[in-house]
Length: 324
Image (cartoon, rainbow, N blue to C red; front, side, top):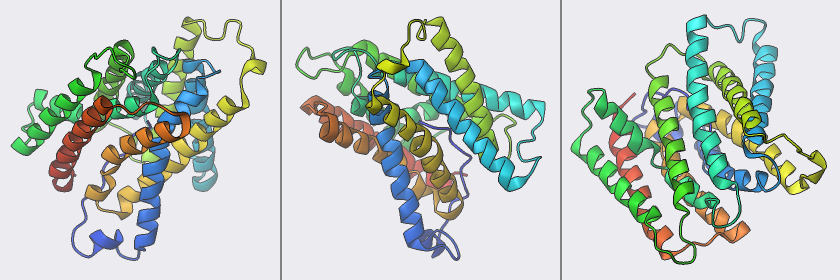
């Protein structure tokens, strides 16, 4: 999970195919493939990271490092004033960062940590997080917006899939209920952060906003990690190379490369096409978890996941093409 920049204006006509005047279709599909695979793979990366690294401390290190790298790049490319924002924008970015990264990502990391039977498999976590667009629609409804019937139908379908996915069965591969509820809480925090980001005075540049979001999220995650005693008795020598490499992957490819590709897509591709990541990512996550770490894919997972993805696809296709 990473922060979401503002949506671009929808593109129609010939530009919708190429992504805009002068933009090669191959570049658009390359960037889209990066977002599909890299963001879809972050759930597996989290699972491998927390095998031997403290969950919240590793998440804090991930976002602090990625934010620092992004800040340095912006400073070098744009000069001394690249990161200048007013206090109102800084407070807004910090609040959104805490909701997205400390609440959203941090709770996912916690849910994926722990022994088998307690930790949520990475593919299941991705499917549960896929409910974010559904939760955002509910938040809009509470604040007086009136989503269309097709959108509300998609929300209903998606939540039916959520119930099917977490319904206790007692069989092998059943979804841990506490962990599943933790991921739902993460998705709720992410949804609130996403909802507020369009209603607060945020930095105009999404890259600058992301720097402050990452720093704020990392700071809160570090405090929570210290409060949980994660670093008490921590031995860096006991961390496996596998976990270090997974953390590095999350920093570079999950938080920097994929995000950059996403922001580029928002300016060069129709939003209806870019939005498809919302229901492709969980499919990628489930497939990678099954293929690389043998996570069980039961009939319950297939059914519940398919219904969730169908609901999200309905919401995305009926909402995003017509909204800025």
